[in-house]
Every structure is written in structure tokens, then in C-alpha cells.
Length: 478
Image (cartoon, rainbow, N blue to C red):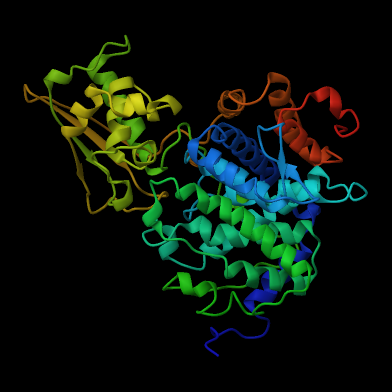
């Protein structure tokens, strides 16, 4: 038995006890506020993501399944799916444009958990309604488990190189959240974690392809499936978090620790907020965008003048070495979302980056292609590949020898500079209104902001499908 050294209770047993033991009284005001922001943002990017090609493909695939139980497909009134495939499709939608939140150590925490707990909450018998507070608690348990697992490895603090973190910690977080919602006992929670671990992992080589969004969809689906299987008594290794051949298989420096006691439990979300993106691309590109936008202002002013392309000799981007975001000639929207060069050139040309920046027309416009050919990357040794400490410097050298440059250490939307409430709402509304009517969009905002008071959280699914608020008089009571 290659168990890691640990005296007394196992790490897995400790996690199971905490997952089972946490209750709504443990939630702090700040955790509730931050998690509501995460939920609202995730619903918005998921609704926008329903329009993407990859989401259409997985939706069509998932229609082959049928079940007496069904859950909402966000943005769709015409059909529903079994909870597992609703979690899968909605999870894919959340990550389909790389627009979802990002945490430190690096992962996308909400997209793996929220689609699973919403789908599961809709599948309960009507006699056992799931309240908004139940949903909030389960969601935060799923976020907490991800954060704790990430802190068992020092290498997890850097931008990943080998596997996509949501496929590992996201799957475990989804499983823990669903185990909580199903009210499984400690043994059930142990088995849920063990089963989920055997679903975990996906190589990072599929970044910048249509397959990457499946990572988050699968994390949501597999976590839900693990909890459902454990609820049927399926057993797994009771020390899955203790062993190097368990979750430790993903980290060369895996060093698990017990969780704090339940008395005055310290949530990681209290200590570490998330980054919420202003445009749909890899988080590292957001530093580039802010620095490049400042350079453009210096070059062309605030009058909206065109960038003087003919006067530009070269563009230098000083960024950390992140190989899968080094794409000098992106050919698709997914490659463009994972390209320091593309985002920098888009910001230089347009002054900002938006959802529209990644359309096929904008990717292949001649002016952007011309600027891409003049762009080079440099990797200063002090620029570490960590979302906590990286920076970006953009320098434009003109043909007359002048150089214009600017540096971004913290972009707007980072946890050190969080989006203001009105900007978060503006992002949500812009995303949601592309799919839902105004009445449903406003209903989601009101429901999320009052979630701890909602008696039956299936109201969220009703709004997410686009149904009229007039049909919700019995559900929407707070």
C-alpha cells in the first residue's frame, strides 16, 4: 500500500466528514456574495455559449438519450434532457467560448459545479423541493473542494502544462457538490470522491480546439454521475485522496493535508476571490489586452482614429512562457482565444476586445493579419506563469525609431481588481439577452441575488429555459 504518511484519520475520510458536515450556517456573507456573482456570471456565459457550434454538436448528440427524469437545457424551451446530459450540455456551453471564471491556483471553478447542481435540483421529486440555500451550500462545497485539492500541489499554482485542471479538480468538486445535494452520509461521500477520481483527467493538447469545452461539460456530468452511483451503493477506494495512485497521480508534488474543523469553517472563497472575464479568451490574454489598449490610446488617441499600421515596425509582447497560448497565426476562433498575439493585435486595432473580436471575419481581416506578422513574444525570466503574479508589457516600435509601451500588472476583472456590480450585470445581460427574453433575464438576476431566500430553486431552470415569469407564481417566493 503506497499510502502517503498520515497519522489517524485518512485525508479522504476527513474530506467526507467536512462535505457531509458543512451546513448553511457555515456560509459567510462574503462567500454568499462572491458565489452569487460567480453563479450569475456563469449562467450568462452559459446562455451565450448555447449559440456556439460546439454546443450545437453536443446537444444533438445528447438527444439520443431519454429518461423519465429531465432537466432544463439553458436557453431551450423545445426540449429537456436527463440530468446527466443536461449537466454535460450546459457545462459545455459555459466553457464553449472560454468566457467563464478562473481561480488561483488555476482552474475554472463554477462551470464544473453549477450545471450539475442545477440539473440535479430539477430531478428531485416535487415533494422534496431544493431551496436556493441548499443550492448555494452545495455549490460552495464544490468550489471549496476544488480549491483545497489545488493547494495540495505547488505546481498547481502555475498555469498548467500537462492536463486541464477542471477535468481533475472540477470533476471532484462537482461530485462533492452533488453528494451534498443528495445528502449522502460520510461513506457515500467517500465513495463519490473515489468514483469521481476514475473519471478525472484530460490532456491539455486539446486546448484551442472544440474538444476543450467538453472538459468542463464532462466534469459536471461525471461528478453528478459519481454521486448518483455512490447513492446506489457503488464502492471505490476509501483512501482515494491519500494515495499517490489516487488523485496524487496527477501531481508530482502531491502533499495532502486535512481540512480545518467545522467550527467556524474558513472558506477559501472568503480568502481568494475569482477572476471574471470581460471578453471570451484565455485568462492570460487579459493582461495583454489591457496593456495593448493603453498603447493604442497613446498611438491613436481617444478620437477613434485608425491605428497607423504603415508607421509600425514591430510589436513586442513581454509575457510568461505559456506554450499553448503562443499562437502567432490563429486560424479558428478557438485558436484565437488562446493567442497572446491575436488578443494584443485586436486590442491595438480596436482599442478593446469583445465577443465580436473572435468572429471569422475579424480573425481573418487583412489589417489584423498584417499586425500579427509584425508581432513577437519575449519571456522575461521574472515573468512567472502564474495568474497571481504574471504581467504583460506591450511595446510598439515605429519606423521613425520611437517606441510606445505600456504594462499591465492587474487587469480589470482580476480578483485584485474585481468587476463592479454594474459591469458584472451588464456582462450578464448582454450574454443572456442574446438567448432569452428580457423578462426571463431579469428573473434570473432577481433570483440569484435572493437565492438564499428562494424556497424552490427549480425556478432558475424555468427562467433559464426562457419561460415567462407569469408561470412562476408558486415557485418564486422570497
